[in-house]
Amino acid sequence: MDKLKVKIVSEKYKAEDLLPEYKTDGSAGMDLKAAIEDNMILLPGERKLIPSGIAISLSDKNTVALIYARSGLASKYGIGLANSVGVVDSDYRGEIFCPLINLSDKEFILKPLERMAQLIIAPVHIMDIEVVEELDSTLRGIGGFGHTGR
Image (cartoon, rainbow, N blue to C red; front, side, top):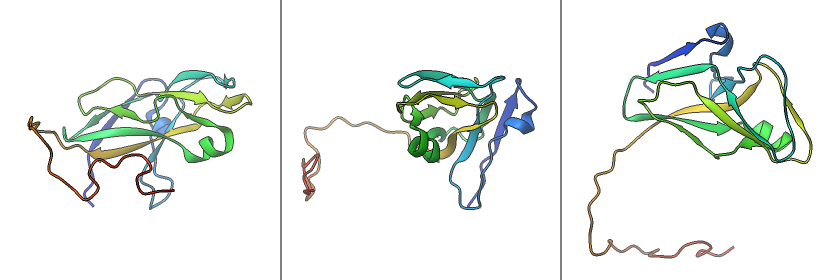
């Protein structure tokens, strides 16, 4: 697989402390770290915008950076992203923030430089929209939620 050039800048910590990293050879996502100076408490039901301390530059305008929750934080502590998936467009140059939400009934303490979300780079297909009278038919047709049964 070809590698995509991504430039990263950090002003809050030494850049090497905040660099996202793949934890295993098969990881699709790179972990983003919390660029906070002190422990931060997330109360049950509370959401806070957490800085990652980095900004990125994607070398290909047909790519996007997607921010996902870390499955371990979500399943063990109820910590997710308030927007489900974050979208970082290829022309955005500002710092990446993660809107963490505590969906559990217990407070959660986020520590400085703790891994809080994961970053995945994906291709983008620009749409060429055509207005038509009707769509082509398929076997499924308009069958929506639950159409195949339980």
